[in-house]
Length: 178
Image 1 (spheres, rainbow, N blue to C red):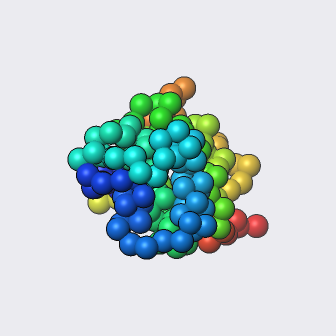
Image 2: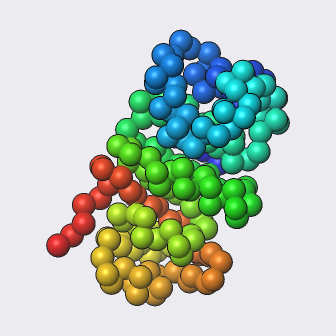
């Protein structure tokens, strides 16, 4: 699980990813690459001091450290809960690119903010509206999805959603109906 707010230790980048456990370099390199941290590691190294609660990292870097942590632990399924809510648009886009680039990992993204440009990246979209979920829509990957989605939730040029959206993608994602 990668949460909206993740805890990072006042320790090195390596220790924050490995959670102070031993890890072989190949596995650590794969996790860093999968989380989109290669450039950061090249520029700063694995010994970079993250600071108390990750104060020496940007919001996007903190999220990617936690994604790397999950990947290093062999997570086949990532539940990403509001991971971009506290990020600016550019950083949120970078984090989501890292999530979309993950191979061999099912991604379940929970969000209240839905970017129109990201819709085609997911195998299924589940929209929960009202309390207690008076309206539920499950939208499979199809040509009709955009038209149906526009009726379920408002999308403008930026983003916007009036309900909780669960987005599933990856090899274990919801199969497309035929």
